[in-house]
Image (tube, rainbow, N blue to C red; front, side, top):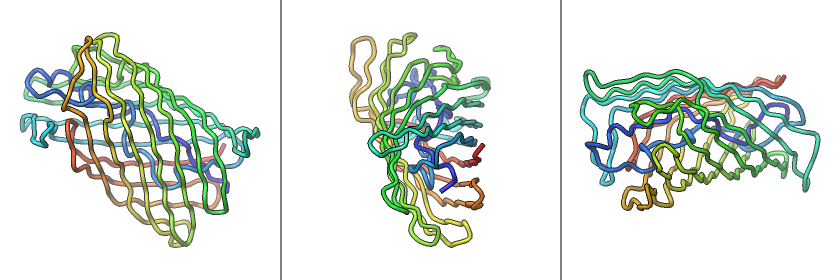
Length: 304
């Protein structure tokens, strides 16, 4: 196997820090209803590492939503509300020649370039472009068989993106976060392809707002069938559930945990020469205390 199979989904794009809305809307899950992790980022071949070497990839995302749902599923934003988030995210992965317990040791880093545009009403809008929150981490990957692969790892999110608590749009979360993860991939060029990655996000306190977002459980998944000649067709998406309550200035926020699901068509093409592409569209549903929208994802992987 010579293509890169990443052990971690990327960056912190689509950071919907809509704090300005909370003055007129019910409290949102996590601060502003956002997250350091862009749910649904991963796709086919999420959880198998390639041979030792240095690999590069680029993620592209385009997310849009025109409503934000409250705790009972009702829309809590005006009809003029709209958010668009676009990101281009270069990533470098180093799979070392070292092994621990039979697993390959790997490191990676990502630097997202994000454009976020938020419009609430005429005269009430904002757009920002810049570097988002940088992500770095490490992982271990096992090849259990020719088709079955698994990883465990941990990622760290650094508060490098632009943030101002009084702004409508922010491309950074303004706090550190750590995310343990584990995943498994079954890969057959002419058969079943199945991927599952579980992530648990632990958020630190935002020092400017004294707000600590709750812990989050995130599952990215993909399921498809290999057609041969490098092509895989199927579906992909995510499951999101906030597990613990938010805290602010010593008080605990109750009955406002976020949740969401998404599904949509997914496609992969593997050149057989070390590079591959994945493309998917996903539509969100069963949303609570978050924006309800859709996203396009593109991932390109090339070995150096």
